[in-house]
Image 1 (tube, rainbow, N blue to C red):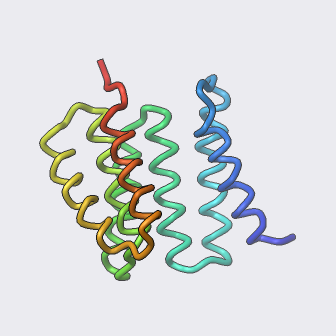
Image 2: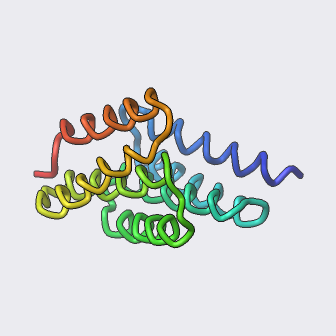
Length: 149
């Protein structure tokens, strides 16, 4: 069995669920399960960078499910390891992006704005101009999202 392929396949499966405009409860649970399966397999064959990205994916899956407390726990783990390992570029940006997304959806503008500033600063560590543009567009999407009632 190719464990790396499993990790990638579960990552991609998680994204399939994330990108659906609507999910039922079973699909939401499958999305979260797939994110955990991706991390489980990356822990067997991946690097610290794979683990950081897996934690980000788990945070995103919980956020998509409107389960913000566990989303924040995995976002925190992702950011702490990103900073500890000195990861930059996309990984630094997305470590902050996860907090911006959650705090925006929770209507916690003070925390959101603090992390939004960090995310914008992280964009400057990205080498390619088109990647910088992509990250800025992601922030713009988040800021235009509907928020909790």
